[in-house]
Length: 125
Image (cartoon, rainbow, N blue to C red; front, side, top):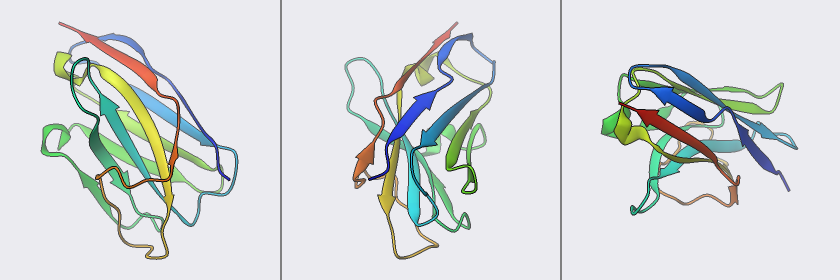
């Protein structure tokens, strides 16, 4: 099975940009990839996902225009590109993967079979 390891989290200031990486131990070309986050005292929420083909991206409204996702199947890596960060983006960010025979769809609902352990992002005001 694919294992996922996130990296790139840290402490940044509001308005800054940050890129998170998710390295997979196996092939990701047939997997939907997504990023989720959990802020203190809140439920885990879906942030953004990309279909296995890379053709479709879905995201929650709160990150529209600020976050994007990309994938490099040759390197078995997915990235979360965050810009204009806000204090409310502070959370532990989790990478997730799910096998998907439909290459052009993804969901930000937590219907993923594989999860990383998370990386902390703190955005100070």
